[in-house]
Image 1 (cartoon, rainbow, N blue to C red):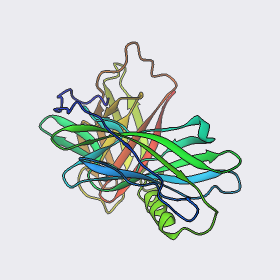
Image 2: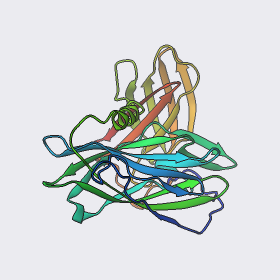
Image 3: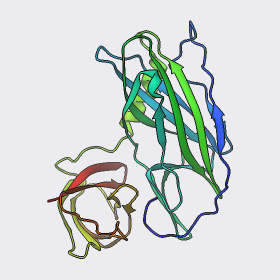
Length: 277
């Protein structure tokens, strides 16, 4: 759970469990699973055949219905971050999940870091030898006035390495929606955490054509994220702000830790690591 404020959302205590069947493709092969459906939306897997090194480009497509949201890796007051578990027997392992740029919602004391439109989370997988079948247990949250835990078993068999234009386009669009690494005109130039671990001071280089206050999301230990900034001042391409750091784990030692910061400035977004040595 992200630590921002602790105003609970009304929760629906029910789990929607769906098992998605294979979508026929040639000899029962597919590069897309069937859609798993829930009250607030649907989801499916998309993948390409392994490359020569066994690496698989894949994605979890999530389509919330209008008015619903689904969550980023650190979700908010009472959201559920996406969880992807690959069955060990499948011979496929999950190396990483990437997250497109989310939105920061604040309403009635509730803070959400989420997506309110269709999103594809890029998945990096590695396959063993032989026939490749991805068998994944997916668990996400989707919310409107209520939050619904949405669980599904999604599976698909991968065919040959022939061109798959639709799948390639979906995955290319997902990659393009990821935050960019730091650049000369968009980066953190300085950061410092106060001795009492209550305030993180940031100095940023921002795109010169940007305006207003950027949205800053700092993620610390797993399950903690901080979005409340004060004293923000934009002076040309330079922006300085203090981020309020909420309660951290008991006896937390910052020395040697690596936090992450996502900065959203207009239609550009940058994510980088903050080192505390």
